[in-house]
Length: 338
Image (cartoon, rainbow, N blue to C red; front, side, top):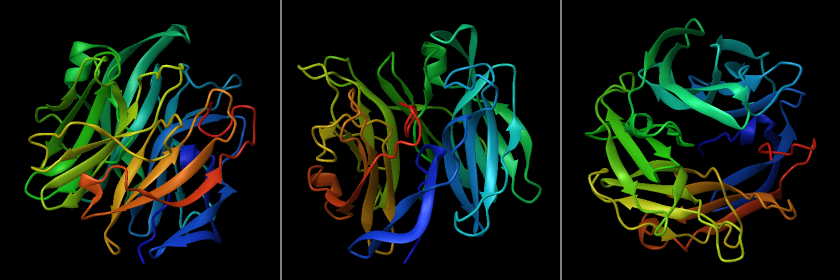
């Protein structure tokens, strides 16, 4: 059985205690991993030759905050499947807030996308400085290059940012990465032939008026047979003023064209930001991780759902619940920050 590791917003990781089993999918309980006064958020987990690398944004100042000029990129490692971790180490720290950290691994290098924002005026008034990506060498645990990322979301509007996903490989196309723009309501993506060069030209997957759809944070995966499937956060309020659950996004031709977004049954009736979706090849299941975020914070939870690879594209309301856990509440900020 393949093992997958989920580090939900960096406060928690895996323990050995199993809590559910469905179709050979085992999910462990949640245990503390990195709990401190520091604000940590927005990152990714990469398995490189059995070593887990965890990259994330951290503000380690006295007045640590979700948005601040002190935001920087750090990483830590685990040699025992997340049971213990090395101390975090800074790999990039500019004069701005270095945030929205995502990426993946390609040709032995870990690639980290990030956005720099200027918060010098105040925390509620900021602007994007630029988008970049760095290449991290796991042999020496150091950054070997930092490149500017030219994106249509940045050219068109300052609020363009990365999605919530790792990039992944699509046969005959290359590595796939997506960005989104919450102001212009568009999802852009591109393919990189080697996973290390990300200025090859961007394509648009979805660009609707907000009266039709409002697609923001997104995650995609390749499931074979020229098919890419994804989930996107719904940013449109319902009639009672609350947000709703994920849309499913599908391409049957490796991203050349996209089907109309369709609502899923994942955490139906809840507001669900920051989706995660990926393929578990051994069981041919598409797995999804959902986090709910209600205004009153009552009954908030983390869920793992699954759908079969041969039916997921045509049954967005056919996801099965594998397990569900209450969102931990170790501090007043709570899991996911708010």
